[in-house]
Image (cartoon, rainbow, N blue to C red):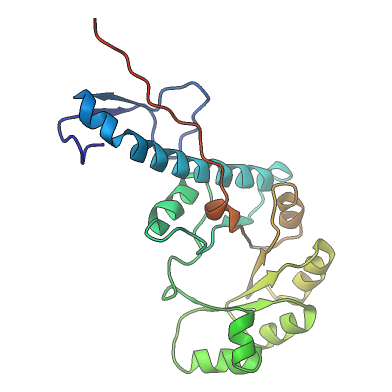
Length: 225
């Protein structure tokens, strides 16, 4: 808004991360009508989209805490973000009480199924990566045998991909406290509390950024007589 009309006065009534109820005023604008109208739709699109992400993240965090307020499981986002909007979308996740996974590929190494297949298995994939970088290595595991291999290699974190709750429970018995665990795949609001109770360190949810409903935000005018 300010980029279109530098003289517009913006007064925010809430801080980032605050809970806003339906019908409350988020901010007040004062300025020339025409440039405000020019910027209205873009501004509302951004605000509604990012507020929707923060809202969905807060729901996942609340679900995890609902069964145990002291639960240490953290809700993570993923890199499933819109081009050019990753930083803003990930910031919105944090404002909703979640945590960021990798911002980009240079933050850490995540070996997924395609990488593992191309390099001939988890062991050669991890060894090749370690020969070229000191970054933390996370390995995706789809079954108990892959979990065992990743544990033997002493990777930084094991991503337990698309496992049932029963399989997750068994997999977690194989992972020592020195290795972090992350559950991913089909993590819905109805399921995350049960997964968190299993004792996993992280639950990653791609839907936080790629499927969050847009918050209902409007711009209304108060005319001076």
